[in-house]
Figure 1 (cartoon, rainbow, N blue to C red):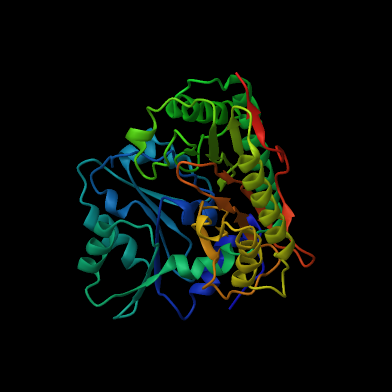
Figure 2: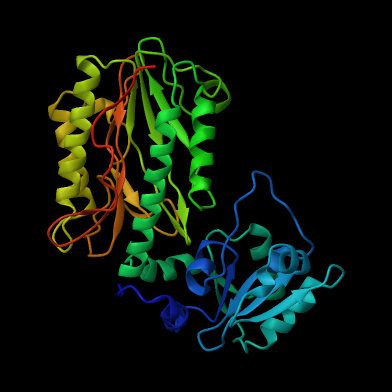
Length: 387
């Protein structure tokens, strides 16, 4: 079942309606799902977990008919400002209170059946499920995120406008980075500058770990080895592939461009041209109501294959995007989802060649009946750094 995109004010009641007959209670921890549903913002994530006593019950508890109760440990309520959430009942767990007692009290007010179905967000911690199971041993768990995706998959025009602004800030950050690029900078120098400039645009910063994929005759491709790749200086005769995105008002952008350090040769120019042509083909194919995700992937991929670089296009064409960086559906050969207007995707073809020249481009695109609508349009030519 699919549904039109609700307004911000309608999301919570629309979700509660979807719960009817599918779950008796939902537990939605602080995170993307709750931000989307109730406007309770999520914070910049930590590399390591910071624990508070009773943190497992931190989140919203609601039923198809009962408005949410937001349970918060004192540290979260006070130090993270979540106790200021408006229009929602808040129950604060003291540092020395029993979290199970508070959870039992909340559950008692929900009037659950003997064998309740509990909808829980996919990103909830395992300890939350363990403790809820202990309180409700006959419960059956289902995915609250799967239910919620029926609303999240189609973006409203307001969400699209917010994402367009996230893209503007992303490109504005890149425009500030370009004049600072110099031969001899390390990859970490460049990444740190990108992240700094995104924050200067009034965002939390990156929506995912800012990445460079750099290749050249003297610059091997190092995938997934950040502590090795970050220390390498970038010199002439190198393709520098940017992959980053800024956050804005809960939405996550994802963007990419290619920079040549040094004057590009014929091969660099060719791979960049092929990638741009593949992206244009993929964008044109994003026709809501007629194309499938797999068909869009095939159309763009064919451009790269016909140019002789098929094995070097090493990933899917793109992915759904919005409140998370990666969301279903996916622009891949196995996804038969029919496009609907308001779906948002990245279109990000690439050619990756170890010890040779590479290119990638990435923009967020909205599926429309006549083809995709790009939300960012800057820096279409191969950018050259000559200093």
